[in-house]
Length: 588
Image (cartoon, rainbow, N blue to C red):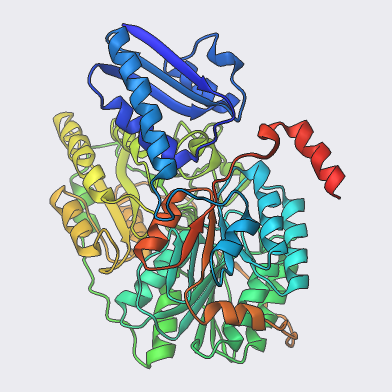
């Protein structure tokens, strides 16, 4: 056995490139285990857990690249390290722009005629600086990066508002602008329904249901998860509503978010009424009353259904796939009564928590509806548990679960071993940026879980919901078919799947005190919407994108025929925080 490593100083690569190369290196002949990571403390800890750490690697800095291989012999280890370097070079130079790649956002904006939007997915501590450069270059911003301080978000959005520009994010994973799908987004037909959402998978579920219901989406403006909090004040949501109000292609608007801060909710509901267009509002986990042109929706499915009915005059005709919860519950062994939800989508996870607590009582989570139900550790479930496996505690040093299902697969098998578990609940999210075949990845693992349960004298119900369309690269029908053939119950919508899981657990005796959603009050009067002319211009045609960070996003845009140039981005000042702060002061 041979453990060999290399450190490449100040050699930044995005996490997707590193994880894909790591996966390929692990498959090379003679390789037992491999690590291809940046030298952050979190990644060093992962290497230590995998038995790949050495004293030499302990000296690596956060901006250094670590290559380490555990192989059968020294020759296999050295060959694997060399191959890893070759693949990383190929990923950096193998773009359609040829040999030259701009080093800055400003030079990239000059290189791409008509550039009007920057898609930024660099590490959070550098993201605000890149976004400031983009705004200074006159670009709208989609900020996928998370872990950006809220003070930086407020400052960015204040500067963007002064320039008449849009900042979507931080932590904005989904947008549909001018027919282009950015980040994690589904392929849907164009149509008269616009969406504003502080909810990535919420936008995906609603836009997919609108498509499958026979209508289409004009645009979807993502805001980032904190936008509707008190500190930020709903800045991006307000600009998004103003833009869709002025957009001639949008006839109906859908507003989606977790329950906002009280004052922000009042402002946005007043703004919704000021659009003079029908606005459907779903604050996931809360209830919004309907009045005039404002339509409250209890679930994401309700939001899509109301929007389609308003746009077409007819309700959507979604094919329904029914299962019999009592029949499933009757197969369970004594003591089986709990649900374990393993989610990749944060908004879908939050909706599941709300729906389940209305049916079966308290549900524990790493993102609970009530702090009293916070799990001490997200790694260990108790009673009814629903986990957001896309949260930071699961994604440090790893790909998002919509790209890499490995952790969810391992957790599924572990939960299936619990003799008190009756139902496993999963979301399968399709679209641009997501795994090429998520159902194909889960099907054999689910079969294994079912076989183990039956061998132990237990029944196990696996319920999965599929968010996507027939136009997605993965194909909605193919994904559903793969899951059904593996023995999975696949309802037509997310909320149907959650209700099915709840009914099975309830029939098995897993019911506690139910929770009713909070009812929000409507504000008096309307407000004046800001002038969003520059944003309406952005929506008029597919954007011209400067991509900074994950090359995966640039690849998906090219596949859609969208103009994009990628920046050969590296951390400023070699990633040294003190030097960065000094340079910032000099530039102030």
